[in-house]
Length: 183
Image 1 (cartoon, rainbow, N blue to C red):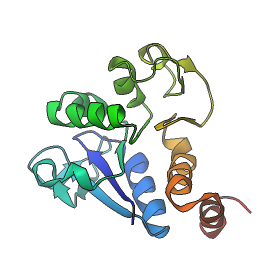
Image 2 (image 1 turned 180 degrees about the vertical axis):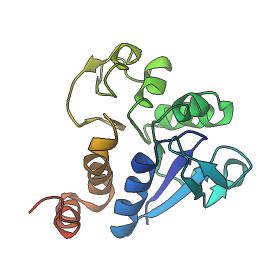
Image 3 (image 1 turned 30 degrees about the vertical axis):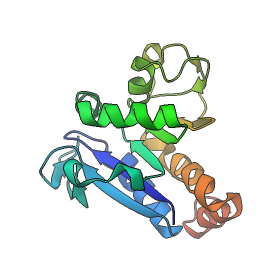
Image 4 (image 1 turned 90 degrees about the vertical axis):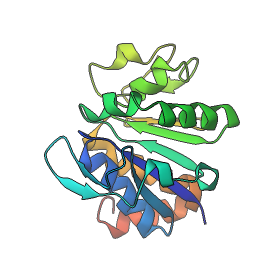
């Protein structure tokens, strides 16, 4: 079974994190919410407290097939400030393993040089941070192992793309119908 880690930092956008967790778990994927601190309870940008499955120090990165970075402020800045997480993002990218970011979080990939020569999208106003990318206004962009999306309103599209990568397009389309996203 494929395993996905979704990282929660203080100030994350809850819809972006939890939609991916929900859709992917419904598709049968093993999804772990990982706090980037040593506290399992993490407060979102809208003061919603969510208990992560584990703390960063407990994560075995060799087990994961994908790392997901939700956006939100100051969540995106807090993710980028976490040196251990940034080392893992770089390692996954270097190994060609999947990395995904939504909303403001694709800016992290831009700052790290990951988007050079790739199509990418982000929350409006963050396009200048997508350094070297061919910036689009699409809801989701997939460029090999790098996935970006625009924001809360594209969270279901983002989650379905991720589910489709690991479960197949048919399963993702079935899930879209099951949650009454598409007929």
